[in-house]
Length: 403
Ligand code: SF4
Ligand code: SF4
Image 1 (cartoon, rainbow, N blue to C red):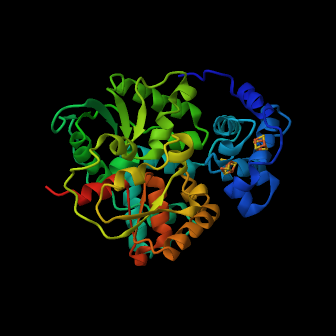
Image 2: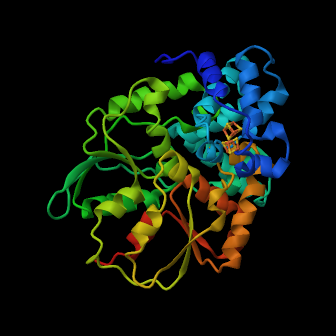
């Protein structure tokens, strides 16, 4: 699959819109940490512009500044000139990777996280690491960090191809399972299989689907990301009323296919909790009460890419007795950001800490988030001893459901 536009030209066109006003700087997590122009959106736009115009070489320094970017798009949300920073970042990383191919460890980590065989190899490496060394959340080695973040993979079980709606049918949706969800978030996957039919939706799980391509896009491996997109475009050729992803990171990438490849999926892409909040009955579900304080962490993919904030609250308000509060620090990325949590330990952990401090200060007993990457990263930084459980909101709702 070929690129619809010349990426150098697109970088230059987007960068031209930046009026250098600096309004994005205080909203940028990496600028707030480093207080350096080169770690800011404005600085990165200038670096990308110079790279695309061949005014700067693809040096290690330039690569570092682009690599540190979380892709959280907080800058894009506040930019008065509507600079399409997310597109510029994706194109710049692809241009950079053409001149400085990513290192072997990072490529192996992506392969491991996004393929079935690779996932089995990674979990074996993680199990060995756990056996040999105690796990520390703040470790900086790639496998050690993976060991601290990835739960034991559930044994692979066959998924149904189709589940009928329970009660009167109100629609037909297709489920995007995703590689990390299938391996590491079986709870949320099980919740999707239980709750979507209960919402009156016939559920189809198309065979032949694969990784959404998010991690490859983050790393500048554009051609591989487009190949993965082509596989999913084919697998979801008959998508029903909506394509439902169980994690907001995958939903965000799927919703970007048109820009990535020139071809869009032919139904809206919805994140699971968002669709359930809309489709499940507001009253009458047999839900057990829950008297706990639940912190809501809203991922950047949910709020700034999908632009569907508030889905966790809208869904969980159905549970009697529940006490919900949004983290004030939701405006800043938690540091997970694709494989950033594995490859940029200092930044990733520094960004997780204020959220966890707030969680403790405000007496959060459980934390919900719609993105598996955020969940694994925050969980690792919390540590086993905290006693705070982390779940997808749909998994929490399914747990409260009574027969
Ligand atoms: S807010 Fe927009 S126009 Fe202003 S410096 Fe940032 S990217 Fe450029
Ligand atoms: S995407 Fe996030 S980390 Fe990157 S420049 Fe924009 S605000 Fe900063």
